[in-house]
Image (cartoon, rainbow, N blue to C red; front, side):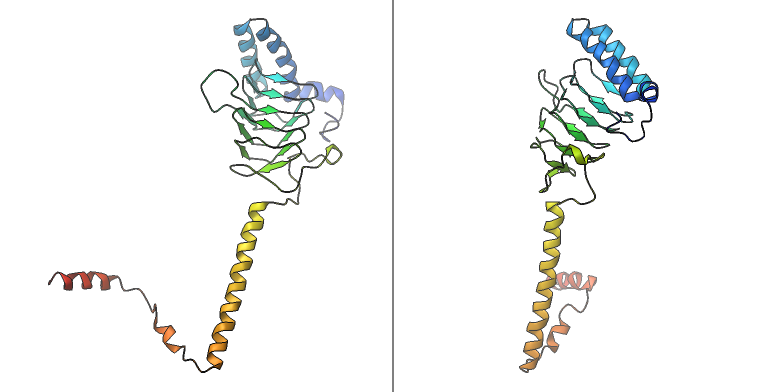
Length: 237
């Protein structure tokens, strides 16, 4: 907790005031009950924990060591979800399913994954080791190891995620190499270049003595009654 949350000031504060810690501690017990076939007690214990912490973890979910759920409120972790060691989840994160069929329905987070606030990871997909999922992203496809995924639906940035020494709390930094943003910028640059070339062509035509005044008469305005009058003349009205 101290490594990933600068607001943590003492062990006593973490033990008594961090709902994510409480939810994970109780989950260890409910998961054990679930594994021993005591399904209802496990679910009821998880239900009570949900009311106390705002974190809903199905007893069937598998969670590794040193997992950190910061703030916790609104986190939902499904039955077949698997979270590896040293992962970090922020408030509003959902590890949800996309099918009612039995079997693996929820995501797998490999070691060291960071999931930003409000992100939704849906379906039996895999988020690779050390990957980052940006805040409010909606991930429906697997993310490669050490990649950063942002957006709705999530897309993988060209720039790889940083290592653990440069931990980014909400999974994205101030500078991201977004391929969509670069594509839009390229289109804007191309449009500006086309405008410049068209202006040069028109200037060259004027210098050659070409009369371009007729161009101004094209598209002088839209007359809504013109089409109606033309149709009436065709019908002989």
